Length: 532
Image (tube, rainbow, N blue to C red):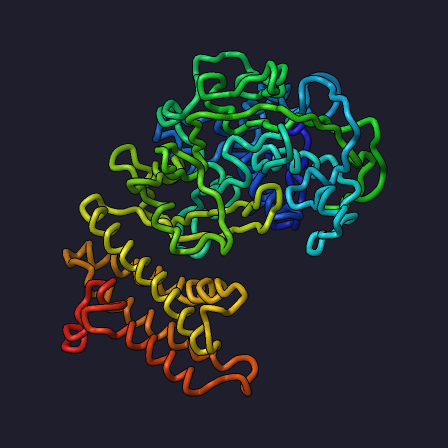
């Protein structure tokens, strides 16, 4: 199976779900709308696969060509001709180098193919019968198409895997942020898979700014499986820094040493997608001490932050997911955080990709990992606004204030709900973070409506105070609604009405306090609001 020439990518078309080869992404007879894998993490991996493929084989010469291809995609025949030059690097099985697999045949006991899945319960989890949510035995065999997706997904997101089993170039379960067209906006361009990919392909001038050594000409500098693995064992191994690999290897990084056992295939149905196949994969072999990516790598599809030691590190999803309190740091650079390069190019003062007729969105996804354990897959989208340079600074300050006010109100609401629930809330057991998450989810749409108004107000020459007053009203209303909802739930015999009333008074006192509490955070005078 060759991943350039053969159909293997599951997509949704007007005719239903179908498998296509990468070069068919621009087919006009049966237009490709979106990816349709059996797993959301596979969809995230395949999106990055297609971005990496176009970035490697056909980056735009300049901004004008990038716009031309965005508006009028190249034909499948043109893409096939371009991709075919690299097809030798994309053999999934057969003789010679194999996609995302170690150059040399590996020795060792075979592992179940299910272990290629990041959320699969490991051997220790099964031994202590802790596979409560993702059960063992559900995946025994998978088809070649799902095998390719699983391989790329694991290499791209590789978590800790025990001694010498390296994490991905961006660490275990990195947060990925890409630009997408808002399918609900009044768009001049169709929201399809081609544009979901091409929006995130950099032109050659921007590509030159990526970390890595562009002087490396050997193909294995881009596709590491085309040469002997640069191992990282304790005796003779070595780390792989940006000086040791081509910048494009960031799209094809391969920290794990894996060889699929194509000799032990089966016939039947794939346990992931249900497709009938004569070549179902059951097991693979792996060895530790694969490529250990270290140093100042900065992947163009991920945001970064500065550590206490001033080192730029990739962002990772955390418990609770990605919500609007993270939004500003994903779309703008701050003193200690940096948006993904593919996001930054849409908002640069010069060489910008501003698309006046399009409403864009920020598509974010990734695994929340606890060392080797996948706690959750998170995926969401946010509006992506392009700002006039004259209001950028004022917008960042005011938007930060709105977000800070929301998070503080969420925390106060949780605190007061606990005061209403418990006689001694400080001693109460249990995780109540869900109350904060519920508040942020409840107010997300209102937040972005307020942000749109803020942009309009700043553009009209106002200072944005009006938006802060509007946000104060929304936060107070939402806090009381959630307080009333959660304090009316549960065991009514255990509820103390006096305690509820006192907690309610505490919450309203903080939200409407004079020169303190929420008005102080928002830097507003409630008397001015009432007078208006």
